[in-house]
Amino acid sequence: MTTEAARERDAAGLPYVAVYRLPGRENPLEVRLVSWQDHYVGVWVYDDHGRRTEELDLRLLDDRSRLLSRRTRAWRYTGPQMAEFAEDCPRFTTELFPDGKGSCSQEPQGAHGRRLVTVPGADVQRWRDRPRFEDWPVFAAVRRGLPEPVVLRPAALASGTDRTTPATCWRPPRPARPGPIDALFRPGTRVTDGYHPEMTVVDPRRTGTLRVPSGLLAISGPDTFSDEGPAITVPVPPGEYVLEEARVRFGYDCEWSQKWVTRTDTTAVRVRIGRTPAASWEMSRGPDDDPRLLVEDEIFGFDTDGATGCFADAGAWDFLRQLYERHLIKGEPGAGEDIPDSMYLLRTRDQVSGGELVAFATTSDGTYPVWTGRSVDGEVVEVVVIVAGMPTVLPEDGADGAEPAPS
Image (tube, rainbow, N blue to C red; front, top):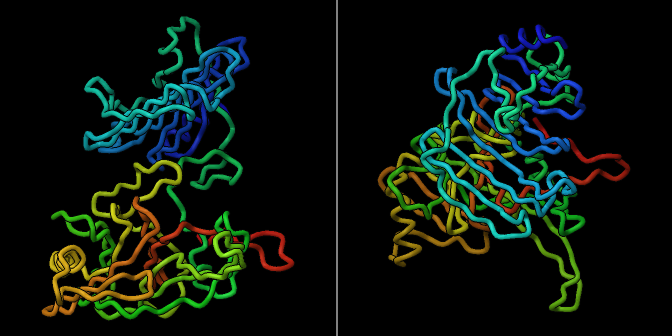
């Protein structure tokens, strides 16, 4: 690909890669990876030994005239013999967001030492103007104070003039993908969680229903007591919907009982909105979640500090959450009802509107993505939360590979 072809792709917003080299030197000085249509620019900076020393993740936001320094990662090699990305290499990471928030992580001894996290200083450059194609700064030359000229060599890693990129080519970072969610609810499917070699999906367990008269389904952590409302909402037709648990059965040698034990665990919970299976899946987002900020395999979701999530009627959210607190924490009679022998824990109900909240357990604290399944016509048919980590689908007997994940 010629420099002129790269310039044309830049103007059209199409992906391309540019490599900068010093004359007479084999190792790259810097690599620039651009896809304006994905709001992304990546920069890789190298040292004289061909080791990557810095990665810049820039995002095109605002009115498309400024770039946010979303993430910067740096490696400080202690000598010429240290391998690229060595585990004991000192490393530093800065994460920045448009609202002024961010973090700085220092690992002076690499992955083997302590990790110190602080807030970014006032001198951190959060924004930079979007340069024209021919005016891009060569960060490596600036960092190293190089007086020698730098040669731009576009790399033919993206071809064609459409907006598709071959699977073997570089691509911009993608957020986490759903995985084979439908398989978790399909009895007989063989899966593994990496610890148990083989687990078998059994029939989903129905655990009552959920009333959503407002037509807005809330998915959130009920233990987050704030006035900001639920983390995520999904519009659905007003109605009463079935709650289910996806389950797997497996056996193992129990060290405690000294015998073979078979047990059944829940892997996911869902609200069934429609009768047809989902044809596609999407990660649901909160009102302030901007997908342009996500790095590779990153998620949006609801947060929990008490290993608990919930499905609820968003129209009665504040009152239903208050009932949850009064029942769970204060033990107030009549505020809620416990659900026995289930991943679903308890239910609260607004007697006036009929809206309900049903809380469910997760396997840990943290952030959990919410996956919304849609029919071929784009209608919401189910909403799923994976509560125990997405297992891997094993190949069917006689098959060569695992079932591919749906798009």
